[in-house]
Figure 1 (cartoon, rainbow over the protein chains, first blue to last red):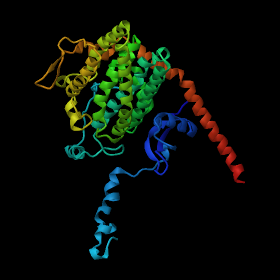
Figure 2: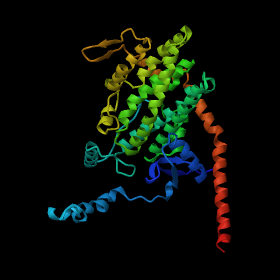
Figure 3: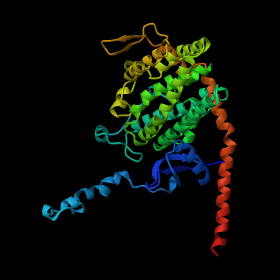
Figure 4: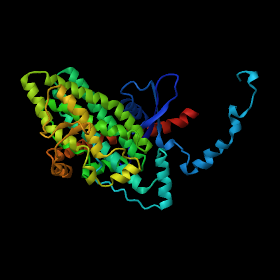
Length: 94
Length: 332
């Protein structure tokens, strides 16, 4: 048999009301075994109420070398924040 | 469980001074380095080696304790030991995943463990002769590992630091369950007392060796400190461990096999005798009692499990094909 056992990324919802959060990865032949393994590896002490597994190769990631052009421009856009706007105190909380 | 100064890492790197300086700036600013970030080759290689050694240690570390699961003296002890050994397996898996983010494959790491190219903590090359060894391992071996691992939670490489946070949360249970076993035996019959003292006598020095060679003999340590892969020196961690552990042993009326061990008021810590580094290197290089058995058992587990991995992949492939064949019909 050729081929490596595929890699999966594991996401866990710690409790209802919170989103699933990436916790790590693991190898498994298919999605059923990936879920079983994720349960054993990442939830031995009540860490979650729900698990997602996603094939690692299905994830498209942004390039860290482009982090500056992707994310730095927002730092200059101060008008996107409420504190940019001067409202007299007399108006009250807004 | 695991601790040991990294053995044989080569932090050599060939990037331009400007690149290295920019990288060092990020490290100095306590910025975490993440998988796809540009990093010096030496940094990558050192981490692959260290995380790999660490993962291997967790996996090989299952063997000495697994040896006692069927002979645990009560159902409570057996359940706890099973859970602990399962945790060690889990720790190995978190760490292998962290290493894989650096571009090394699981197969390659497994192959390097089996061929002897990759090291694991040499503490696991000592045999577990009695039930008391299980208590001593939890108390001392896991205790030493915690000392070493807590600073690793702040390691500059993000995936390693995150894995270590999970590991450290779980280690505390290991140490406490070990100490409780030791305490029960220490407060038991004369034969039980003797058994636990014997185990302490055998494990004490190897445990002190887990922190790795003295700072003066520790190669590459400076670079690893600068890169914040390592946060404290081997000797500093060893001293911290001795200071924390000796009172715990004395509380139980146990003695440590070191005539030079005594409190030094001036330094606010214990002085202790010289460590036999010849023994350390002999065991690292394969001369320990259990080196051959450990690798033989790991290889056997891997080879005997091959048909399961193959069957699982074949089953996954069959399901994929069936789904593909069924899809056009369903669409009609």
